[in-house]
Image 1 (cartoon, rainbow, N blue to C red):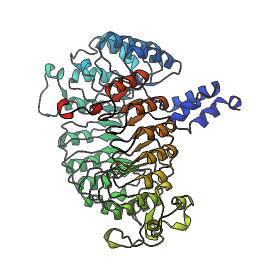
Image 2: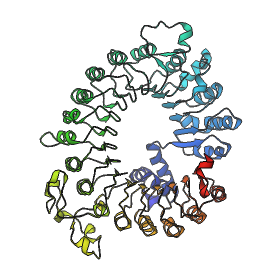
Image 3: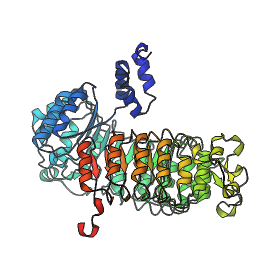
Image 4: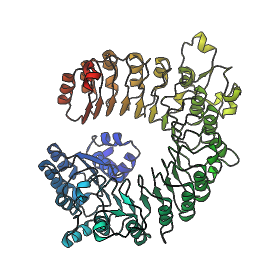
Length: 632
C-alpha cells in the first residue's frame, strides 16, 4: 500500500507526524524512508555534531540525506577538529543552509576553508567565537574577501553575540561579504556608545562603536528587519538615533537587559518604528507602566511581546493592552507587582482578548490570584496553547479547575511550585461549599466560570470507581484529563499531590515532557501508572522523589522507549539495578542525571556509560553518598 502512493503524498502525510514519529516511519520501507527525509528537510532539522573523531562516520552518512542545518560543538584547534571541519566541508558544505559554530575556538584558516565550501549558506552563528576576532586580521586579504563574498552572497542571518574582540574593522569586513543580510545579533558585545569620541584608525581596529553600527544601519536600512542589542549599554539617546534611521523598518527588536533605557525612550521608539511585530524589553530595569502603555497604543501590529523582570511594572500598565489585536505571545514573568487584575479586565468583553493570543507567561508573579486566572482562562479559551504559572504561589484548585474546563487546546502547562494544588484539583473534585477568591461562591454548574457539567464526556466521571465517603461529598468538575492535547506538563514541587491523582489523571498519549520532581508522595505505584499513561515521553524529571525504587523502574521503563532526557538526582532508594534497567529499555537516552543518588556508585555510572556510548551526558556528582562537605 505504502509503495503504491506517490512520494509527494507520502511526504504530505508524514508532515503531520511529530518529529520522532517521522524518524520511526522512515524505517518501514524504502518509499517511506525517502518520504520521511523529504518531510524532515521541509522543517530544517538541526543536527548537533560534536567535533570528535567518532563523528566522521556520521558526517559521511548525513551527506546522503542532504542535511541543511548543522551545529558544531567543541570546535578547537586540534587535529581532530581540523579533520571534522574538512569532512563537513567536503560532505555537507554544498547542502548547508544554516551553520552554527557558537563558542568554538577555530582558527581563521579553518574558518575560511569551511565557509567557502558552503555556497548556499543563509544562516551563520559565530556567537562566542572570540578566537576568530582576537587578532583583528580576519578577512584582511583581498583574495580571501572575494572567496567569502561568493560564499555569503545569500546570507540572511548573522549572529555575532558575545564577541568581546569584535571591532569596527572586522565587523565591516565581514558584513560587507553579506549584502543581503536581514537579521543581525550583536547581543552582549562590547560596544562604545560615546557619541563625542573621534575614533582613530587604531581605535577602529580595537573597538566596536555605535557610530559605526549606525552607519551600517543606514546603509542596510531597506533590507534589515531584525536586530538584537541585548546586554549592551544602549542609551536612550542611542535608541532614539537608531529608531529614526531613514528607511529602517524593523520587524523584530531585542533589547534584553539594556538597563539604561527609559520609559520615554521606549515611547519614542514606538512612534518611530510602528511596524514592529516582535519586541523584547525584558530586564530593562528602569521601565515602568508608561512603557507598556506606549507599546499597547503605538505598535498595533505587534505579535510577540516580552517584558520579563520589570520590577516597576504594575497592573496599571495593562489598561490599554486590548489595543494589541495581533498579539500572539505575552511574557511578563517575574514582574513581582503584577496581580493580573488589570490584565484580565483588559481582555474582557466588550474589548475582548487578542483573537490569536496563544502563549502567556506569568511565572513568578507571586501576587497573581485565582480570580484573575479564572477570568483569563475563560477569555482565552479559543486561542491559548501555552500557559506558564510557575511559582504563582497563591493559586489554588480553583485556578486548576478553570484551566481544565476552559483551555482544552493547551499543549504546554507549567505549574511548578504551586504548592496549594491538591489531588482534588487534578481529579476535578471540589467541595460544594468551597469559595472562590474574595468570597464568591462557586455555583453547582460552575456557570460563572464558563463551563457546565452536562457537556462533559463520561471519562472524568469514571476516575473514581469506588468513591470514598469523602469524595462522595464533593461535586465532580472537569479534571486535568480534559487537556488531551498536552505535550508538556510541569508539576515540580506541587508537594500536596500523591499517587491518588497522578495515577488516574496522567494519561496523555502525546505528552513529550513531564516534571514530577520534588513530589515526595510519589511512589512506585504512581510511577508505573504514569509510564503506562504517558508512553511518548522524551524528557522526564523525577529528582528528589525518594519513594521510588528499583522495583518501580523495572515495571515502568519498558513503556518509555522514546526517553531522551532523564533526571533521577537525589532519588536515594535507587541502585545500580535501575541503571541496568534504564540502559536496556531506554535505548534513545542522551542525557541522564543521577547526581547525589546514594545507592549508585561511580563504578556503576562508568559501566553504564561504557554500555551506552550514545549517551552524551551523565551527571553523577556526589553519587554513592559522597560527603558534600569534603567534596567541596
